[in-house]
Image (cartoon, rainbow, N blue to C red; front, side):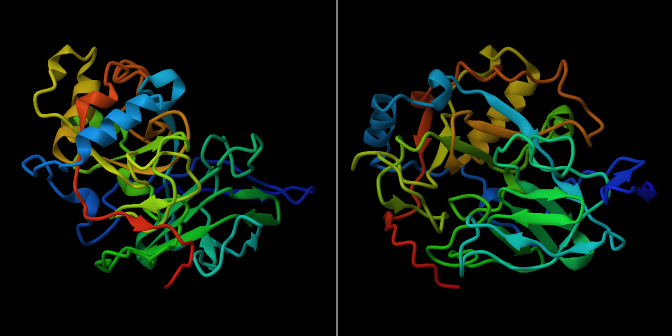
Length: 322
């Protein structure tokens, strides 16, 4: 790993002279739901009405165009990364979220930013994998400037254990409203360039699409949504139909993603407009340019997907039990 030298300046900010390092997966020692092959599993008997409801509600966000957001980074923290405490904001919920020290690699960044400061006032997810600590740290709305570190919900995932069906706790959120970990379902340029994504993919929907007041396994949480009784539940698992003609997609990169959707599917994780989320190529050997463009999967309509059955929906109460 590259050694980073940090010099302290008079304003109290730290200015690293070298880049941080990205963390490739897999992040968990034991397989989890996103590693399961669903290519030969029968879809839900209610899936047809749920897909029709999703269509009636407007389909994907972003004008019903499936598009890719390349703004996430997962940072690798070695044993030398300094531990930092943070001040919880009003977007930190108890007992759902974890008040823990976080290792911060020098020169790192939050989602959508070049550094740790949340200048754009976006979601600013902070994702840090510390293998020596056996922990994946995921925070929503992190903002780190000089000596100040504040953030919303922090989920500290133990990467050495096999989580039960309720993950970190029933009715408990994480850095995603579904209660899922984020990093394991982001796909990277290195995976796509290698020709295989061996896990399910994270996707999001506008909050007027999912069923009101409900979520489904493997999710453990939902949020305030406006969908009707036929709508897909929060955390829904969709699988691209096996008969979809992926050879018609405009790039080999798009076909790699589509094959993962046919085998593992994609899980609804949060609210928003750009359906798919990938890692940036800031820390990868392969680069997205010439490999996969943001609109290469825009031909995929909601009707091209099937709903997978994970049991009855669960009423959302927000009463987290850990």
